[in-house]
Picture 1 (cartoon, rainbow, N blue to C red):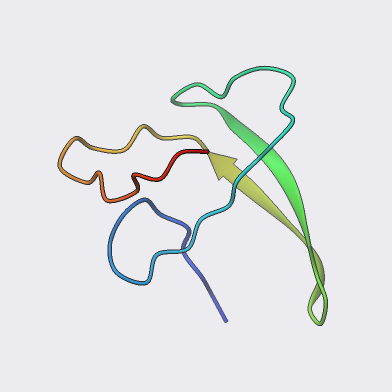
Picture 2: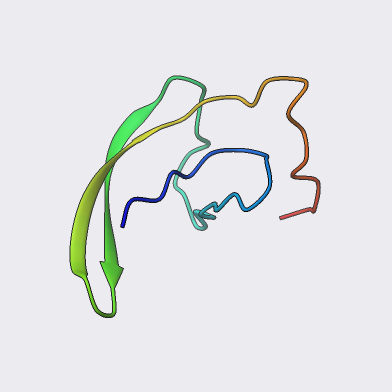
Length: 62
């Protein structure tokens, strides 16, 4: 199963990264390992993007 992690929209999934050593900046790219109970470890490439102004449905504080 493929899941897109994107900002906004119905049924959108997202990840919260906590304890970062420095803030993420628009355009940053880095590798991240996700560990799933059944699927095991998967390496993904993360691309940090600032949400477009018209797509601000994510409003709860972190």
